[in-house]
Length: 90
Image (spheres, rainbow, N blue to C red):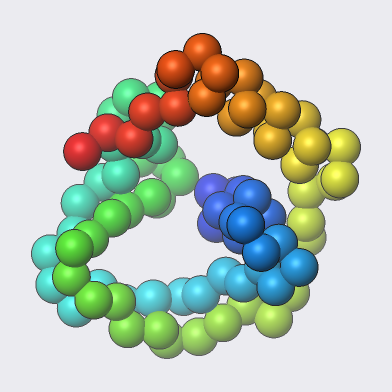
């Protein structure tokens, strides 16, 4: 859930942050940006797929990170981009 919260809170349109429960309609794999490179064993349950996803439900509410935590994360991401380390693993 924490990874989903971060994704929603850091999205460009944070005022409309949404978290969906989805079902993959094809093959999916561990997301290497959050798993093998950072958290071996995929404890965040983060996945990616080139296949469509079926939306099963939308979470109506969740406990957000504090504004301070979100701003700190945004600053950290900005620093990574400036250092050329904002890498997405394919």
